[in-house]
Image (cartoon, rainbow, N blue to C red; front, side, top):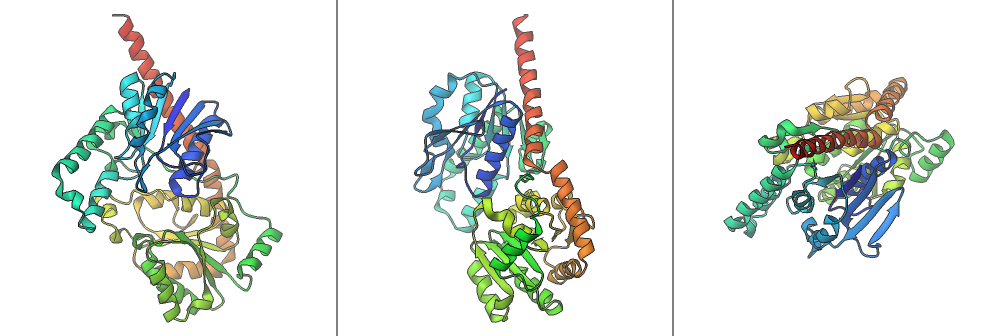
Length: 406
């Protein structure tokens, strides 16, 4: 197939959307498909580039620092002249270029839906008392545009059906995201020892949290988890990787509790170097708390966090929270432990147990790594989506053929 992948992300890049876009496109190319990614251009990047069999075409998709994928519309005439078999578009309410293209060409469109974008946007506007909510025609127009994009699509892929409109749910395939199991893997012991020494965690066990330090990532319980764990295992250290809106508050709390010597804030790391961090610790944690984010309460926990797959790929047992979607990723008692959200004591207890039982850590780490290699990797995901596209293209070709016989 000749696939056009429309994404408002920039590739290659270090954030979740960029990583997702790149690995899916590369996966299709590895399967032998022709793949073009239409994506956002960052300063200094070439307009066109070929990487590992993927043709990348970059366009200006920003206005006053805001990502607006539909600003790529000037490329439409050139795109209309190309023999695409199918288009995949990373859904964005301010996108729709792929929907317009497939509407004009009569070819299948598959929407990749990562979250309920418009509902999240309106909720955030309400939180900020945004002036945009006072423009009824704008809000009504956005709802119309969202509906039009979905109605143009032959189908969608999503982590849960509740995040797409009801009329397309019977054409929505549930999928998980993944990790690069070739790059994310346990390190040889000499390399691991070197990295632990460089990080300053060679004096005892270490636990890693990686995230954007937002309330729903569980940062409000992190101090309690760290303190409770440290009381039982004084030599433990915590690596906190990333940045975000609550990091300053967390740092202040850590200092007030006298936990400074037990915690290392690494800041943001390049995605290429993250496997080194993951392979240097004993346990990976993700204390998600949906009660801190209204859209997760409205739609159910809809994220399929890449970091959980990356933890597992590096052989880490995982401690996370008990939500239905997360229980599909972390098998409780098999690849890690799941506890009730907002319960730092139970969370710390699970971490302490793993730190004190190396044989359980090893067993769970091996189980988790095996699941990523067999199922939760980007190449597997790309194959799933390619099969969906092939069925769509086959149906579309069959309809055209039948139509020509009348």
